[in-house]
Length: 483
Length: 94
Image (cartoon, rainbow over all chains, first blue to last red; front, side):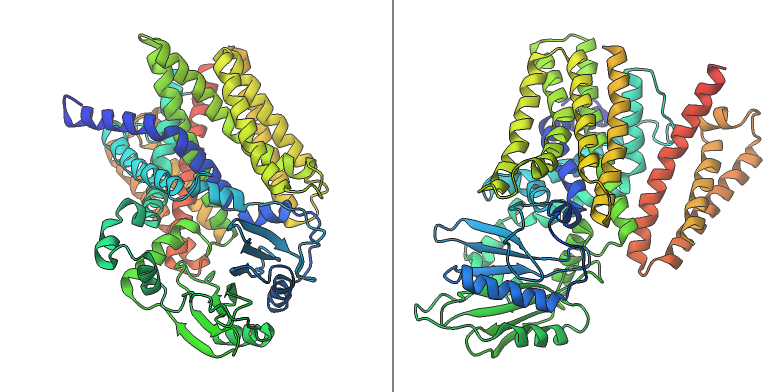
């Protein structure tokens, strides 16, 4: 890191981009998709009939089903139906501690007849956990988010002609065109990119800066969690059997208490124990902030133990920033803009990585540059192909296959690995159009599998897939012509 | 109202592109005087403000209006840049 301030910033921008670029590209792409995670889950459950759902009845039936089929589980976590996601989702741990997650039919409360899939939840989780065990995935995502903030700020500093080149895109000029695309999308969506990276880093701040929590709570994570969520706590099981009170009256009481916000989630801790607890968390789709009202009842007596409405300014600020990131408040147009801006961020990262490689290959290429260039091809063209494979696997695997949600997820990583190996051993001039062509075909297949586009989910998925197929087709033609 | 906000924003971007260093050579045939340049820029900024005002009328909260406005404007910047690229390409290649 030598020379002027601007040169130092350029070094920092390039180095951070090089180190975190591949991870950030996958994070940006999965983040964009997780904007529509509920719709993706709906698309991945074609068995679910589109009908009006009573969230209270659906939650009650889901808990009844869990009582019959997962009675000995340590806890049940139920996400209640919403207009975007007209189904309940149940999560519960088995005796070994592994979690099962199933969409539950709103009419029967049962997952029977519904295919086993993680749906859009896979993209949401992958976005910040990277399919790695806690805390490694989240830690890498947090560091990458922070690196993105620094890369954006240094990008502004090193962009000499930010105003002169504001509306500039010069196609068919090789390296210059890539730089223009990188700068144009980077500058145009800069406020969104800064907001999303900063709020992403804040969301995972406790992993980046754990020392204050460790100092105040003396490594007692439960104490810090309880103070953050005073009405949301789990007490240990007593070891004595107990029976849950009828859940429907409790749900109705909580719904009345939340006054129109609705119930977003229900947690039941120690459901078959005398120390059982039932916690209701209100919906928060009407505000940017994700802060919610919480009520906790004794599961055996039905007595209200605690109720909390968040008013602490610092926590409200945190939930506001978190809310900005996850966009649960967002109406359709805003979610569309989040999706497009997220894709723009992926293009900014991808063009930056490609630019780095082609610039060095023109100067004094050595084996490292050649490998990075080939891996770039595998990551940039292979990641969307791997994600598209997830959609295809959902429709191609037999619906009744045991453990099919695991196979769906595995299909993503198998395709990713194949794309990387293919790109590593194939000349980039050939690998680019071939992988991009694969993306085009995969998107076309998703559009076809969405037929007859009768519901909002299939119409949305089909039209987006068709649009992406067109974009990939154009890119395939362009790269094939140059090969 | 939303359509009006989007149209205002796009017009604002085209006006600002007209008086930008590269855009003026593409979107305008003659050199613009500094006074006209300032007027066009001011008109662009007014239209930009107008588009934000219209967004605020459509959306429930200021925060959502601001997010939408930023998102729409970023797409309009890209559209303007692509328009300039297409016009330049047509001029150069007949």
